[in-house]
Image (cartoon, rainbow, N blue to C red):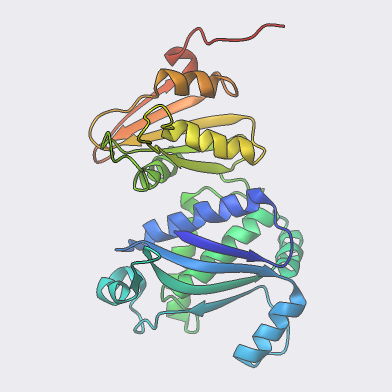
Length: 296
């Protein structure tokens, strides 16, 4: 899911990464027929109190506000109404805009302390709760509330959000994120799209796709795209990388093996192709038993 972030206060990158994982899982769990997106704004209690008073007539701060852009029929959520979703598809953005989410960092931090879990876990919950609203769920009536709570738990459980807030990302989720990244491949010359999802030791996940170039030598593989993004964001240790291709197994090339060994010489490597039923697993130390090293 495409998330557009705006922030009036600084936010930890790891928190945003976990929220993105949760948002992507929300789209999969709902079975959205088209790519979707939402705008997410972080602010303080003062700003969200103003918005709450202006739009809901409630003059107090709250944790999160949801502003759906699509009017769903009662009891019919986004996954069950692909025709309505299609009418809101924006070809320029390449997705359907579901609406706006506003989160108070002040409330988020207070509630994390109150419930005894991390800010990242609280942020993931607040975003999932809001996205459910944007997709047509509600909790005004007891029956609706039960359905919405079940959907929230389904999403959060799938990404393995613990009370500590770290996403114990399952292999299934990581492989799904790699397949998702593959859809953004720029491969007009080889016509061989590749996607990668890299799980850092701190719980963040970084996606990458292969980006080709007419000079060929300037092409960058999906694995290196993901790792460059991760390293540029401060990650240095990695647990698992999932690699997705379309028709045949796409084990990492020699350059990517050497590149990954610079940071995690024994990283787990998952490979998926086709419809995802066939998955192989190995260790980078097996794929590259004698990596090049500079000795002091």
